[in-house]
Length: 173
Ligand code: 2AM
Image 1 (spheres, rainbow, N blue to C red):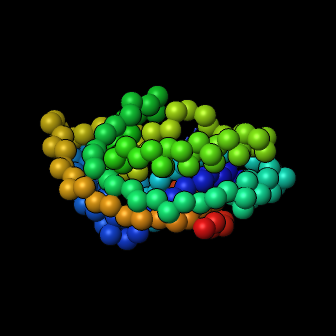
Image 2 (cartoon, helix red, strand yellow):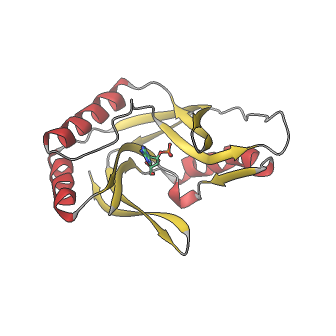
């Protein structure tokens, strides 16, 4: 099963992300928009694992002290990836979030759970493999928007009728 660990978002944050996403939706030669129900903050991407590994992930998350975090969306940015440009909304630097994510990945490592060890850059993906229909792309201004969270979710990534779907498997708080 292909899994990752994420923070789920409240509806007002999802609404704001959809507003920002509209810029890419309306000026798009190419691009896969994240569906509203798939918007999330990834903390650790694990990938395809067997049930025995999944049980160890569950143990790590059960034993993890989950802090209450206050996160703030405050900018739009992009990554150039091999499979095209990804545009996202980024979070204001947050030492507590970075420390928590480090604790989580240390737990995974100690439990011998594989994960993508790329440096953590907290972001909420709006569109992947994007190319505009016309230049310039007028980036929207983001009014800083904060939310508090006190849980993490083990998510499954799969395809249903050729649609990418993220399904919560368990919530830890
Ligand atoms: P992305 O949105 O920047 O692509 C599910 O695929 C989630 O895990 C996405 O949020 C994705 O980030 C993230 N992720 C992190 N590393 C990944 C990897 N190596 N492969 C696929 N997704 C990854």
